[in-house]
Image (spheres, rainbow, N blue to C red):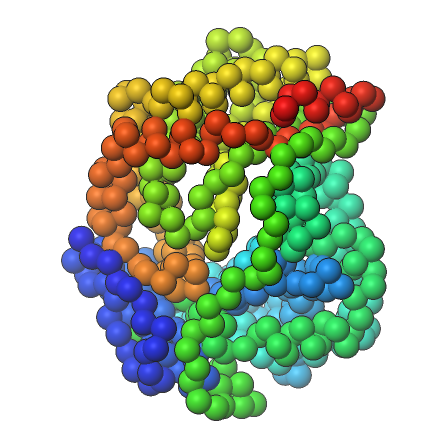
Length: 448
């Protein structure tokens, strides 16, 4: 069992072996000029290769005047560069059966591709071209602005998406952490080409990026391909700087209260939220076991009590959202509007019961088993392996072997789970609701 602590001061041109074959796969890391990090995991038994360029910028890094800029840039980087137009970008990987996509989060953006191992250099060249040479033309900004506005409208039309955006706003307000990743229509309409170009130049820097590759690959060949593609036009020029440790904008403290959007839906969608753990908290494995036991599967307490025994909801589950310095523990339920009061009452009753008495030994064992299974089964393909090593380097500062992760889960005690539960589940929650409710004040007592 091994843990590799990633050295933020690793010098340019040097390579470190983070994990060995005995740890489940050879993981190596090289730092290039400018601070660009390249990390690979060899999977000799597959014929695919998954590439991800992880950029340490997300919606949390935006000022109010730039709300939605990170997501806007994600779209624009597909629109063309000096070497390729938008059609060239898509046709190049389509021609070899590859896949290309991207997503933006609150604390990072990722551009990812999956191809046959022989086609990895081509994928690296295309993605590097998008990231380092995007045109950000005024014409593309205007056309993509309309696409993004349609995307926001689509998300707002989905009660499930909307209620999760609402709970973040209720908890963290109009801070960058509380705002939707895509921004609001008003902010997207006002973002100018010059603002987006400036944000692009300031955010997409080599020291804030990790290039992660997993699959049937050889580290030295990957480094050569990355250095050639990203080094074009001087992107890597200059001394290597330490990996950027970004925390985003500060968020306000966890706020209570209820936020309701009235919609003529057939189902009520609700999220009840409580303070959670930040990403690097040493108790995160205990919190993971608690989440699994409380609302992580069909045998979980919430599923059994809310759905199986009483038939109050079709969907009910718990979840955790973790960030650099804060977190959220939430419970989602979708139910008939007439049953929303009963669901809220029962969920709060179960949360308070676990906060007071913890979980049983049987729940602990099932929670550990579910967490172990999700870790191992979730790493069966090159894409998930790529995500693990990329996010570990960008966000966590350490890379634990799979055996070490499982050992940490197995080491969780029932007292540790009880302590996390008592600290985080007994407080005053926040609530977000989407449904056909004219009297929204009725929900104020639900979180009193």
